Length: 129
Image (cartoon, rainbow, N blue to C red; front, side, top):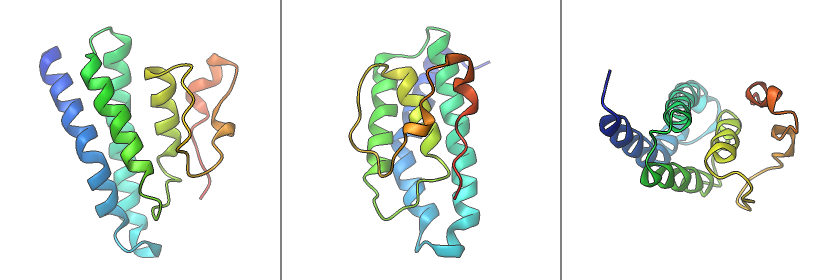
């Protein structure tokens, strides 16, 4: 098992790379991007899961959380990209790392991802394309 230090540094690197990886996956968009966007969405879900687990264990550094939140904001600045496959993960991560903070950079209405019933929280992150 990697050390807490290694897990935090890996998470920082992943979230720092996320906007560029998203940009590369989207490419010129359209049908050509579909496969690459699926790969990106799977990778992004994995790094979000890993960070949330680290956070829930009390091992995520503040700096790591800042990297993640900044990476999400930079991803959403890519207004030409279809965020449908990963926006639910951004909502999820922000709800965990920054509860109570209102974000105004959403490219679409994400209210359907918010559920007052926390027991249902994990299951609301599927967005139709």
